[in-house]
Image (cartoon, rainbow, N blue to C red; front, side, top):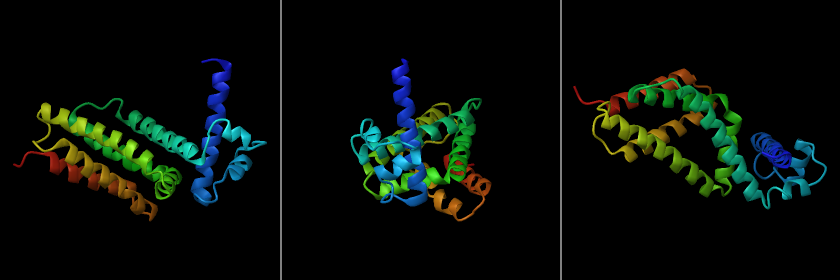
Length: 193
């Protein structure tokens, strides 16, 4: 990466991080280019529009950054895990723990979604569901999971994980939420005795 490319990447990250802070604290409507300039310590809105042609483009980059952060977090938890059942439990726990420990970012994604960022959400959601479906397919191939439609189970799991956000925001224990989901999907993927 050249010095110029590194500087461009650093400026884009500075802008997206400032937007994340503002979206989490003040909401969508108050997250203007002017407010981002102040939060990021920029001298002009032109420094934002040089990198992002519109608020929608900036917020798409914000969603991409939060998803990348979550993938890094979850990926670190999965590094040493083997076996489909253990992978499933770890995926669930890591997702719930990310939501619990990154509530401002979760609020930001909700703000973007509620204000027209549905296409970004659908893209990320679809990628996540496809990875889960792959996990289920591989688990079925090895005999770890009973027969079921992997995409249906992936959609159910993704929806269950996402539905934890309001419960966690209300103060429910993340370990309890994760344990309940792990137990539910462990039973739901096992052969009947």
